Length: 87
Image (cartoon, rainbow, N blue to C red):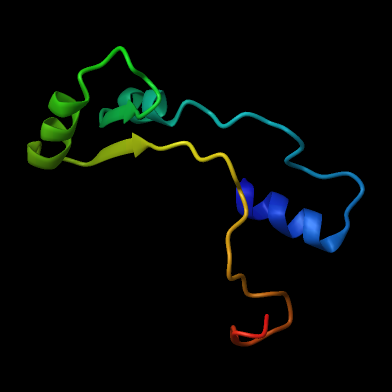
């Protein structure tokens, strides 16, 4: 959603599709799908044991790491074939 919002902002769209919408609970979605998942913002869990399960579990897993800034740089602008340092 962040990348979509970034392109919307850069393109000057007045009505954006991603306007201040919260991210879904990705850890809960992973758990509901039968995968191991945890949210780094959940301070009630023992992170050491969570990381041990993650690294030694042998199954697919998801760790939700929230970030404050959604901007992703460098980006490949529409109509360009390759990224350059001048972009």
